Length: 609
Image (cartoon, one colour):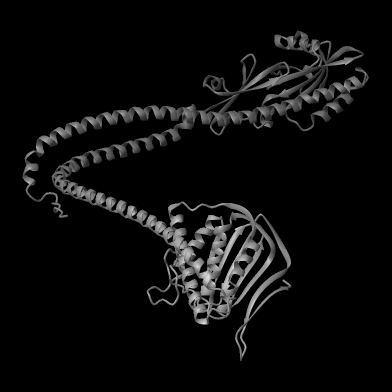
């Protein structure tokens, strides 16, 4: 089919037409392009605004989560430090109660208080309060004014209320934060002391808040975060009140008679912590938008050029399409002709198979009659028949059997190809069937001067298969082995391998060449062809053998070396193999003597495996 040459862009007759309509088309296309560009730009800016808002909230929530985790750690440390100090009250109460409340001196009180206090700078002092009056104070130095002070008459109302609540309850009561007279800010924890079932007084401990926060590792300004603490009355006693006004992250610290709120917020607001990440996201977003818009602009401009190229190529393609359509129609006609020829060939093949089957049946019936009369004429025991007459009848019998075998092979191959070959599976002994087949070839092996050997490691091998087709397969292999072996022996070996039974037919004949061995199972195939070939046959035996074996769920394999012989191996699944302790061997030997005819020796021996 001829092809039109493709014209290059910018050359040839179409160029003036393109130049004439270029400006109006360009103006229309530019306006459309600008409108699309503007709409897409607005859409991208709006989408980026929404995405930036979502991203900002997500970053802030992640930062708040990190701050909340820090608050949890700080609250645990602060709670542990406070509970550690409050536990000293129970030690002080135990001291007083074990001394029957009044049987101890000031020196003993100072010793136990000093022991309990240890080196903790957060403990400002320890007190014993009786009837609201401070009776014991440690350390006394610097706190002389507190000794003898009546807490119930303290000018700070919260102190008297806390003392009365401590007398009424049986747990630690915390008062404060308080501004101490000695200076500083502290909380006072009190625990009632009982003697003889009655409240004797109170054990009190004064905890310095700045030192407590320092021991717990809490600082008002840490890593850009501001910390603050307030009580349940919303009074801030650590840090700045502005922290609570700046939407902080909070963590509540529960106390026995109240709670504290620990809060944290960025020094410059939450946006200061997320500013870098948000800025990086915005810069990246702007760059992406610019890249996308640039890509859109370039692609839009490219569309214009492509549009002009498409217009130019369309006319050429229309001509090519017309020619291609004619070519497709021609190919369709060719395909239709090929389909018709294929159908005719298949019909001829079916007619051929039917003809072969019909002719084989028509030939086999009279051939049976002929062979029957030949058997009647060939009577070896009849002494009146001359040797020449016996030779003629023997030749007729051999030729008839050869023709009968060819006819049966044609019938079998036709049935297999047509799918009409019927199998009748049954349980039978493969060893016995093989022995029967081998015995049929004793005379043939004797006539060719060959040793025919049957060996078996199995006494019985029951298989489920079609007896006729399987015996026919074994017959074909043994017949071929004898036919293609001039001297030596033919060995048939049966053995079991697990649940499988293997049958090998091995000869010392002419062998098969490496070039032909891959075609050995083809239909009507022989290594040497022509009227002058040394061996008779139609080339169907091995093809039938393979199909018979596969019909019975078996496998066939071949190994051969030219000039040394061949070995065919059949494998079948067995139902119940019975093995010999020794190898059973049945042999037909042909012995040649110097001055006399050949002698045939048939013997059955057993050799140790």
